[in-house]
Length: 441
Figure 1: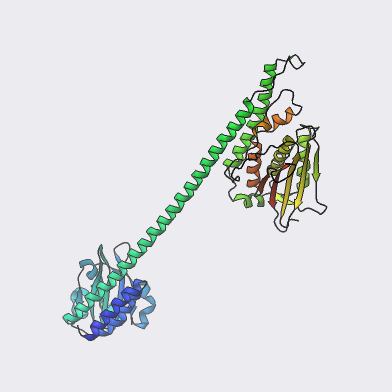
Figure 2: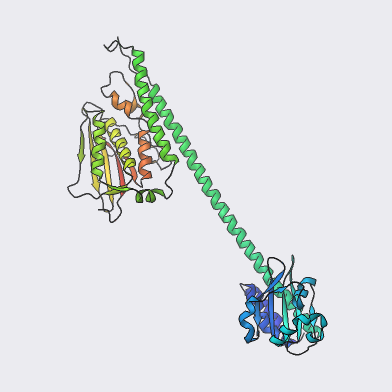
């Protein structure tokens, strides 16, 4: 090779190192080598996935009159000099195409494109041929050995560039697939951990409930004056409590085990506009039938409250549970429940507080999360035969607070507990906050 050939090879090698796509190397190589060989134009073809047809991917000085259809050009492996180079994996040189009787089918194409001589070399990767490069000459041309060596070298560099790009692409796909698999595993692991937390929390909830239901009931000394068997009365109280717990347990499973397809926002978009005050009043009314002696105050702001787009039945049930918990806390001689409705800039809040006895735990446990079931004190649900508020304790269960939490979360709200440690009187309360979307006033 002379100095110009070596310089071209060096430039092509540099392009191989820095180019991002194999076609960049191929195009650069054609522009450098075609003039060195004295060729009129040149073409690089790539073998298709079917392993039968070659299609153009790069060209240099292809005749302008025929450049518009070059993209549609297809050469079958074994057909013509380029197809033969791929099929036999060797350099194919035709000094005078019109003098070769085996290539009469190419005479018309050669006349239209204006070439008489051609040299084609296969592009070979470790797994086999992947294409071909061909140089076309206007006149009958006999190449020197140095020129043939240059064609082979350039073909090898082109093949290496293509093979490198394919391997990098395969590596990127493998890395992407690995990243997706890792993300899927992380998602499944997170779901498993959350399910495990839920399972443990449910077990704790069931244990709390069973402890409350099996705790000793204060004996009916000498009977209760009605002639009923004390043991039968004990069983009746427990049966009522169990039925209440079973109802809430079924509801809890229905809410937590099924999710809205589009999440809370989709659930709310499918909801309806409701007046929170009316739902609060309905919840209070439902509990007055159970505990008529416990006063309940409803505190409203003087301003006009916006409506809330939500699922009415779910919100109604959540409010009934929250008011019931307040009733349970106020189930004392001077107990009082306060239900306060508040309005923020983009939210509505409802706080159920009570004067009476604490039902929320005040130990230093970690804050509850969405996957942890909230609990109330076991003694708050203890059954006593002569308890004037027995109907309340039979109606409120250990599952009411977690059920309210699940409903509020399902509706896109937030439930917060105040265990009273920061208040002088130790008053406890439960607050729920719901977002109010603009345009719903």
